[in-house]
Image (cartoon, rainbow, N blue to C red; front, side, top):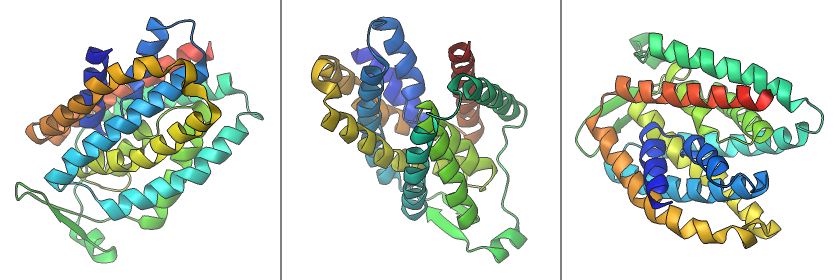
Length: 264
């Protein structure tokens, strides 16, 4: 469990997705008799600790766009609620099939075209340019459409609520390729936004009493995930954006295949 926590923290923080894409399949394999609610509750609690630890590390690096991350996080909340409600009216297997195929195609696109778009001077002129200078002195300048970002974040929340997955696996490529965030800023900001959604989900399961029979495994995963997140944030500083995008593409492909398996 400690090694699993280390892997979840390092990989999840590196690409800004929280690590649920690794943790949930691993727990399904190790504890096949557990209920989906229990596995989801454990995953959310560890994703929260991972996001919190990673956010602290990224804040030291000064790579978090706090304003954008907070607005995106707040936009996902109503989307998540509606998505969780809509599951009662939609065929989840069909949606999982369609969305799984979309994630695999998105993964292939990131592999074939991993370069992030550069922001042109005209785009900076039209929008309000944002500038972040990190702790090492590297400057990131970008601009994005805020209403579009909020609308897309609502959609991310809807899909997350409908499928019971973390939104970071969708939020990060959205920020890089549709909102023109630099890769390192996108992963750090996504990790910050995940703290809100993961905390909300964890508290919901705590009130419902889901952790009553699953708390024993949490300390061991936590022992691994907290330093793992610190290592993932440190590793992010050593890697180019294109490498991080390829790791993200791998996570997207893994999640897509998992959804296809669940659909069948």
